Length: 104
Image 1 (cartoon, one colour):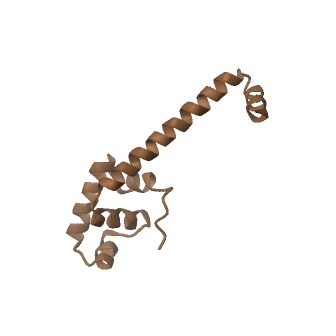
Image 2 (cartoon, helix red, strand yellow):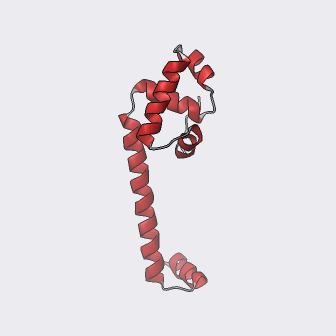
């Protein structure tokens, strides 16, 4: 394919190295997305609701009001999501979910 030839020429490396690197990057991304999806699927519906609303920028108070649950329950569900997604903070969770569409 011409695109690989042009790109490898631009980068000054063999075409087969470029193709190999692209394949590895694609497989890595696929595996990461699959892992993220599997983690999402392991959440309860309420944990998914809280995670989605956090990703949309809602505060714990706003999430509680919207879902008719206490802020403590929001915090508990959020801590479970943090643990499952292996993040420590709200912004880490938002970063992981940044390519997901939770629009209302």
